[in-house]
Image 1 (tube, rainbow, N blue to C red):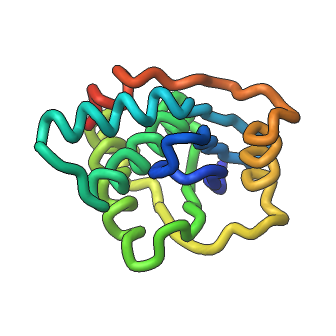
Image 2: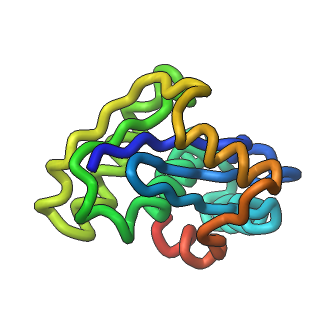
Length: 149
């Protein structure tokens, strides 16, 4: 199954949640609360002494992995929305790194980056959860993210 992945809310905005969603024949969403994002950023700062753009991109990639992790065996292609032009190569390689640790065979799954657009069901799902029109399928805890960081 080919899935498109989109998000609503910026990882760096610690006052608002970030929602990740994928969609095709099935759809799924992941909610990251502002308090969880803040805890993760503070932990990274404590560990390294600072945070930079690559840390936020790694947290973004980890979030995508957590969204897809339980569905990887059914996925034949992943299409990521172009959220960070010129930085999506790092997001893609980090995602491949996590997938290969889960199952090296699944690391061959093609990952493409392109503009998803507002007509995508993934965009609709992410926005609907962000606005509170639909419940999130999964809420992430800081430990899950930090264990992968």
